[in-house]
Length: 303
Figure 1 (spheres, rainbow, N blue to C red):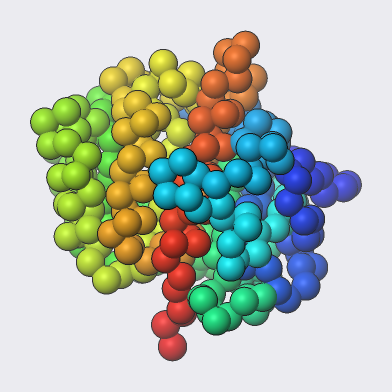
Figure 2 (tube, rainbow, N blue to C red; figure 1 turned 90 degrees about the vertical axis):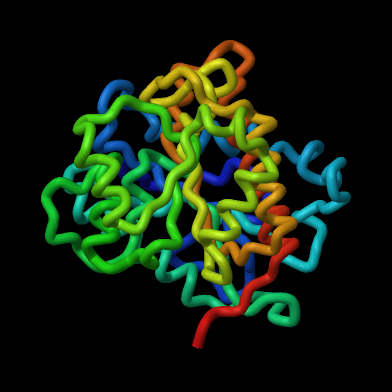
């Protein structure tokens, strides 16, 4: 999707991603990309609906009832970077354009370096392919919204044995290869149904034990939630987590002090949302929870 202008739909101060001045710290930005969805192909409009529903000023200017934190009135400066313009005709070039935009953002200095010395971005997709930003132009022809982490592993972009899939529940394409390959790529997993047996605290503990002191990148596919809570997604799969469960897990990781360096939320397909626009509101709340985590746990880049 090519844009002649860069839309800004939040109340946040606008900063164009490609020419952003040095300063801002936490940065929501949009990746309107959709070239690889299997069933419902309109997540390209997700970034705009995320913002219209999720960052309304009257809500965002109030502190959280859980911890009293308002990330928009904290030590951090939060700005809206608008879109990273990318082509709909060549997925490899589109990924490179997205990577260049992200590199421009991450090259800036934070406005407040007394609390944290790292720029951190929350990317709003778009399909899940946007998670694979890095490693240059991929030599793989099959990079898509279902293979991005496998290819990221092949290109050496992931830490070994400190990665996790959470809330998985879809049928396997291959009974043996899928899970074996997951382990080979350094991923452990917690199935969606295991949450009922383990409980929130145990899930958080297992994540903390697995990740340890590593830096964390959180990628939220909106279909981790049950369709009852997030019906507007590219691949519907019943039996997912509730909104409350996911928010509790994210909040638990924040309390545990995991060092989050970036995040994305993807696969939101607003044209299939219900009349109450539930999925968009939920997605905005997830972003708000992640922002609170970033404010709670400042980070300093490794030298």
